[in-house]
Amino acid sequence: MHSLDQLSAYDYTLPKELIATEPLPERDAGRLLVLYRKTGTVGHHAIRDLPELLAANDCLVFNNTRVLPARLLGTRTATGGKWEGLYLMTNAQGYWKLIGQTRGYLKQDESVLVRSNKGEELFLRLMGREGDGIFLFLPGRQGTALDLLSQFGTLPLPPYFDRQAPAASDWERYQTVYASHPGSVAAPTAGLHFTEGLMQKCEARGIVKAEVTLHVGLGTFRPVAVENLADHRMHSEWCRLSIETVQHIEATRSRGGRVVAVGTTSLRTLESAALLNPELSPWCGETQLFVRPPYSFQVVDALLTNFHLPKSTLLMLVSAFAGVDFVRAAYCSAIENRYRFFSYGDAMLIL
Figure 1 (cartoon, rainbow, N blue to C red):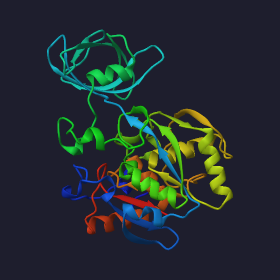
Figure 2 (figure 1 turned 120 degrees about the horizontal axis):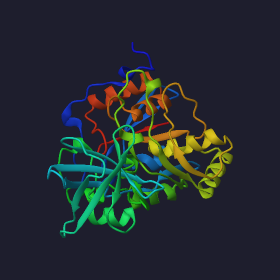
Figure 3 (figure 1 turned 60 degrees about the horizontal axis):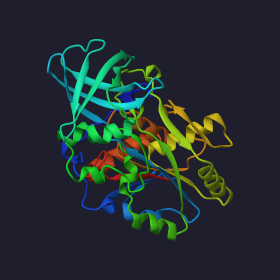
Figure 4 (figure 1 turned 60 degrees about the vertical axis):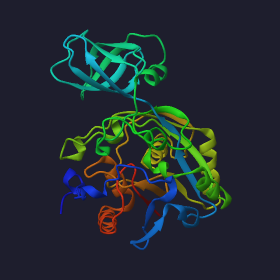
């Protein structure tokens, strides 16, 4: 047995054919593996069963972030070599924080050129470096980051989708139907299963909908590069908990309902706020919360989440919530029953 503080404790072998590289024809057509923590048993259901699996007093908490066209493809003006970058955020000086890759070494004040589909040009000048492969670039055009990315960027897709450019369907399907606050470089994938119809069925059953915002960045998806998890540092991600959602959670608790996080990002937002104030109050700011076993959850009672990559911080979070051995057994069951994995895959509900 591996120590729970070791990265190797969160490894598993996944047949490549179980990686979902395309969405199903309908968002809510996926399967749902239900983990019952009290009994240590699992049940096989469909996403569309969700309203019946939850109770009338429960509260679903969604992350309303929207994925940015954050991937930038260009060339180095000095060498003509190919360059690729992923926008993360804009700092107080107006510099863009990017992770980038190219052959060779980018020099201070060197520029890269990104062209739009219409042939317009955006020059990005290297102003400095931060740790962990993060570059600081100054954009050579006026405009907000959102405007410029919409003009020059494209949708960032997980590498396991195994395609160079987004398909037409990705622009719609790699975005939740309720996405309203642009800022993420990856989708909060548990929410991809929801349709307006499924949400209306939940509402008709008396299940309350609440929202938080967490802009998914490096902290969520960057691989863990150390064996001892105590040495892993999460990157900051911006999140927000509103007064309306706090009130929904308080009302849910008062009537004996459960707070059901839709995705690990919703869970991290709620638990980050609870670390600052266990009573829970409105909050926005940066979180570096790394949830791994053992962890004492303060807010979230149930979790809807997709199946996560081996050795990922997301798998560690799920293992903290449901128990390492239970999650390991559940993943084995999912593989045996040919569930679809990762962003466009099936989901699990931990009750």
